Image (cartoon, rainbow, N blue to C red):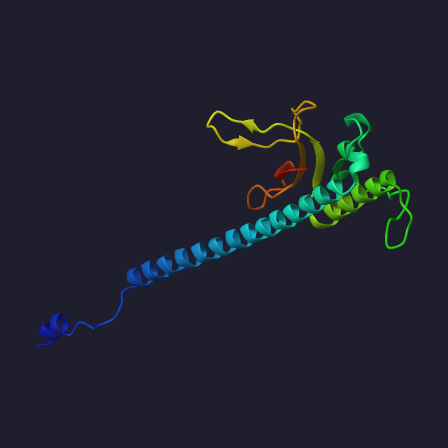
Amino acid sequence: MQRSCLQSCRAGGFTLIEVLVAMFVLAVGVIGAAATQATSARLRQHAALESEAVALASALSARMRINPAQMARPDPANPYLRLDYDATQGAPAEPPVQCFGTAACDSAQLALFDIHELARSVHDAFPGGRVTVCRDAPAVNGSGSTTVDWPCAGGSAAPLVVKIGWRRQTTAGAGPGEARPFVAMVVSG
């Protein structure tokens, strides 16, 4: 009689293997959720930086358009076209005149002030930020899409372009990569 009870009275419940498999599946789910959160945070930061870069490029474009005396100068004498600031080189130098409020600034001083304000903003807001203004023609890669790079390949007939970029972390745990332009805005008018 005892023998038949051992065969028919098997206790209900989970075996150790079933518990381990369930814990493994749960752990994989938790790790996946954490990875998704990390990726989401990184993409959210990049989107915020892109938005800020578009605002800065737009503001500089507007400042350039309202300073026609400097924009009419030949390219080598145009102070805006000499802008190539890299934040890894340190904070930007102060402009010769602070053109705030009632300060009397001529068009050249105003251009230098505009450049300083943009460089200061790039230095403060972007990790390893860089900004340049140049004449550039859009480059088309082998797949037919437009690419943007720091070197300017445009001649005197090419449009003025404001490029803003930064160094972004390449992979988890790795250091930041090289700065590359993420925003390129053509200055119209």
